[in-house]
Length: 415
Image 1 (cartoon, rainbow, N blue to C red):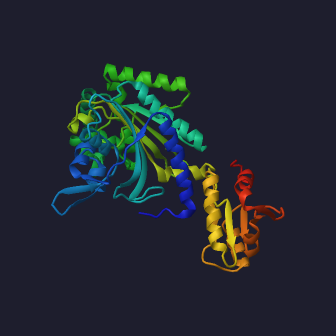
Image 2 (cartoon, rainbow, N blue to C red):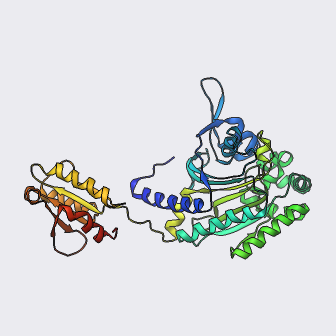
Image 3 (cartoon, one colour):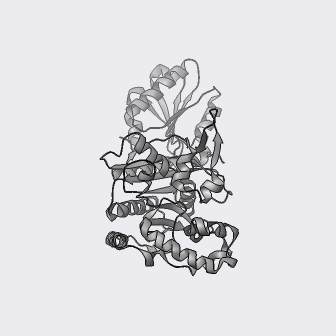
């Protein structure tokens, strides 16, 4: 787990703001969820035979002996909230949430045991149009952030019935090469052979590549859904690659699955992943409800933003107020608050803790503010402040207190 320090938190805030604004421009509304859930929620939704449930969840008993888990992902919690709060009764919901998730996994570049995700879910929508919307929304984010080193991979996992046929084909194939499987794959062979396709073991890759392909086992409706999705992406000019080995690591997915992947952070990895989970709401006790969503890892997105040359807007002070002499501090507070009242978005810093005129000017310069506003006893008596540019060679000027808001708004382009 790691700290996000002030020198990078501005970049986080900028990226989160861009993502949030784009998501909300598509009509998605925020839902805030607890960090803790009953463990059974994740076992039932994610699947018993998954790395998350088997190896990565932070699970413990509370004081009543009830098993609870720090959330490893958000989709199950969104569905649980939709069911328990009656959000899905003859309704459709377009929701987003963000915050920390927890997985006890081997740390690697851009991945931590407490990590942050931005999550978007559309519940009650059945057609491929919402699948396309969610993917196109992502493409708009990358453009807004200036990120170019991402590629889109898509696949279809079909329905439960078509996957059952595919499962039998996988069992037959992998049983024929059982002596070459690793321990995890042998264990998954009878329980969930699709998980073998998600193996990260390099020695397994040739075996996985030779396995049967899900697309050859799609039912007619799923095939039509997938073809329609591709048509919508083509019409929107969103490039993609069909990856028949893409299965995602959670059991609840069906039909459309997709990942935005990059090789800019070392080994190829997903930055944003998602797909349909049409059976999950019913599985967790709700009415049958089609649904789809995606989750984006913010650590990896922040890292990729930097690799692609992204730079968040500066968050330094616009004005630093220097106050020297008796009775100047009270006036400085009054002027600072008036500037904040009159100029939307202005960032005013001021000297706190006293100090000489020279030391205060040094602090003003170190703050990276554009201007220093100088208040001494003479300035207070004359009701005029010294306005000193700190990032240019222009001369200091005197400005009447009443004129300060208009003058600074003009200089800062906030008029």
